Length: 113
Image 1: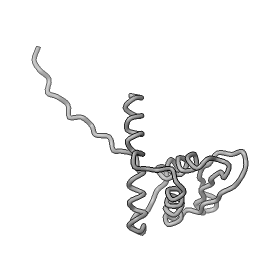
Image 2 (image 1 turned 135 degrees about the vertical axis):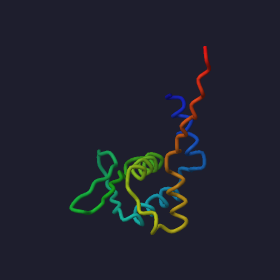
Image 3 (image 1 turned 90 degrees about the vertical axis):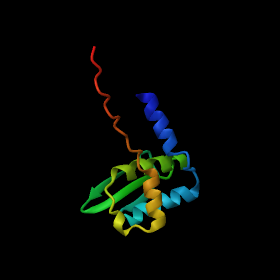
């Protein structure tokens, strides 16, 4: 089970590159989705919260580029998005980072013993 998760997780990010362009696209996706992105320095983990009806995502500037991208991907996967108002390019990014859908295997008919 763990091996399968790692394979699926790895395959999901084969086309994802850890570049500033990727980080910018993920940040734009959050902004277009109605979330406010705050970046700060300090000894804290990245995350998100709803504060007085304001949707805020906090990202740590001290983390590496790869860690910031991974944090944003995990956060975006957990957040509700209204995809009807997203531009086409950001909609592609959104679908690219969604977790792969698991396919339930069809049960085999039982054979008489």
